[in-house]
Picture 1 (cartoon, helix red, strand yellow):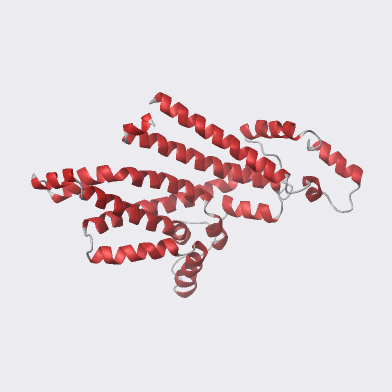
Picture 2 (tube, rainbow, N blue to C red; picture 1 turned 60 degrees about the horizontal axis):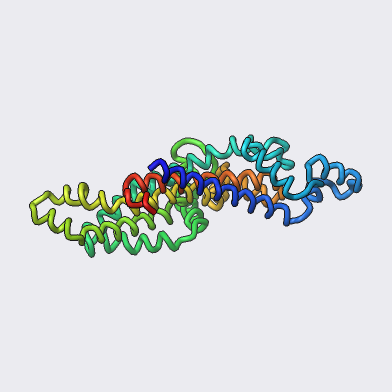
Length: 305
């Protein structure tokens, strides 16, 4: 098991290194960074002085090595837009994104898994006939449209819930549901299909023939074997919630990393763009690695691959 974990950690490190190289070179090919940081009336000498101060006059591989060294220390440089270090902006915004993602993940698990189980157990029943089409609609509905409809219904029309900003628990309901609706629908469909496959297996039929109670067959035997793909989807979903919140954060004016990233792109603040992309990508890689390791604990056969 130790060898498997070491191999997965090495894969994660290589993936993060590739991501850092992609971000660094993508920023460098967008144009002369100095031209975005100086005023049009600045002289060529002033531009050259800034280029030397930022180290942009050095070879690209030297710049990348310096960038890697600073990245490992969490130092992405100062933001020319906000005038503060990029890591300070991340420290301020990242907790808000994590809390929103956690709320969305909680909704995904407590709604998606039970509905999937109920639909599978009552195949072609009333609940299954209602939940399955709704899950398809949930997967097809765009996030921004869901967010706007929720604001119009529960905010503008009924006035039940706040529709923007961060605050108490009620502020999380609409953005968390809008963020997680697609994943709730996916969780329902995956749990249902996984449970149906297990419920049709021979050992489940044998357990029923032995006279085991239906709840024991479902919760002790069927769910235990159907949970592996569900667990994988849940882990990847959490990583997706952390990285896929840009639209929701903009619609609900949520002060998170996604909104910060979009603002940085429009302002051509490449320092913050690099910081937000690498942080988001690193979180996703971390979640994927954790899921792989947990998967290996649940199913030892994975360790041999």
